[in-house]
Image (tube, rainbow, N blue to C red; front, top):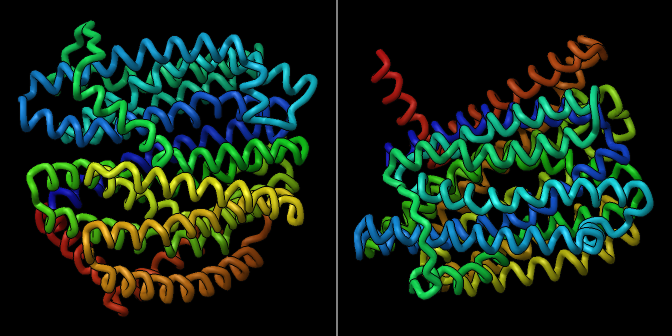
Amino acid sequence: MSKVAKTTVMIMALTILSKVLGLIREQVFAAFYGAGIYADAYITAMKIPTILFTAVGAAISTSLIPIYSQVSQKDGENKANDFINNLINIVSILSIGIVILGIVFTEPLVKVFAIGFEGEKLDITIKFTRIILWAVLFIGLNNILKAFLQLKDNFKVPELMGIPYNLIIIASIIISMKTNTYVLIIGSLLALMSQALFQLPSAYKKGFRYSPRVDLKDENVRHLIVLVLPVLIGVGVEQVNTLIDGTLASTFGDGVVSAFNYANRLYGFVSAIFVTSILSVVYPLMSKSLASDNKDGFKVSLKKTINSIVIFLIPISVGTMVLAYPIVEVLFQRGKFTPEDTIITGNILIVYIIGIIAWSLRNVMSRAFYSLHDTKTPMMNGIISIVFNIVLNIILSKYMGYIGLAIASTIAAYIGLTIFYFALRKKVGSFGGKSIFITCTKSIIAAVIMGIVTNFAYSKLAYVLGVSLFGKIASLGASIFIGVLVYGVLVIVLKVEEIKYFMDMAKSKLKLNK
């Protein structure tokens, strides 16, 4: 478990590096494009391949991991490599077909993602979409290679691929403002291509060898195809709900789509660091544990994963709610990003961050079901969550405007989590529910106290340091630091179970460095 923890910490560090660069990318975009017509068009066009087909790619890689583990154990590495090649070629052929269809039917496709777009905004979005659709080719390959490298215990490269991606887009934003707006979308296509190309050398070192074989009769590919649709619904529910929010947000006027995007980026920053990082290590381990019939190891991994996520995300959620507006202001409010945009984005962020615990634990439990080769339960849970989200979106947006969309997604997430928990408990028996409840309760108590202290600290520091950019950054940074210290002390005093584990790991690391 020590090796797993060290790998997870390493991935978190790499993810932070990549995501900080992603935030810089969003800051540059906000400064140059704000929350206007071109920003809305670009964000909507990018959603089509990166949200819809990333969910498909994620479903393929999620289904791939347990199947590859079985093939590798049963038939050896050569057969497993044949399976990967066959999958890459089939996905590539299907992707080309999807791109051609998307180009032919671009306008109705865009209307699905932005029902409120008309006139010039619609025309720009259609043109952007026809260019970026080619990214579908690389998204599938990217997810397959990422899953392959994770199975081979190479977690660094998949996390580092965000660096060239972000650098290319930042360069495209700057160049587009001096030349032509279409440079932005072409650069984004090249950025998505770079993610797949970045992983190829490492995959080769780990034994991947490409061969142009296509065998639709391969029983492993058929097994994966059977799994993909239900896994797509289960894994893609968060993306689908984001898509629904964005589509309905397009009816609330210029800038609201962009505001949802900026809030989602901040939400995604936290999720990627503390959830995706942990799951990328733990999910292959859970699959391997069950492949070797180690159910106790599976349950221990599941409990520790849930508790670790709870310990990190509860204080982050509370801290973000307290500091949402200054965070958005410091990160984005410059250039064409106005104070009104800050308020809208901050409102959405507060509501979304409340739901991050539910979405994150739901993702953990869905991976547990996939490790158990049960795709039906996550699929049904996903359908229920989506239905609740749609119904609540329609009702709440009518009375509460754009903020009702965010509230609907959060409520739907907690409904899905509750159903998931009892379904998983019924499936595998107890997996440490009492420990999870105690950890959750202690973390909430510590986080609430931390939130009160952080809010008080920020108000006092902002008054003393003033409203200059430096003053705002200093006030925000100092308040966050104080909050982290308060929460750290409180979880130690409250004897939260996993904290001792993290402290022991830190002590052993310090001893090794002496």
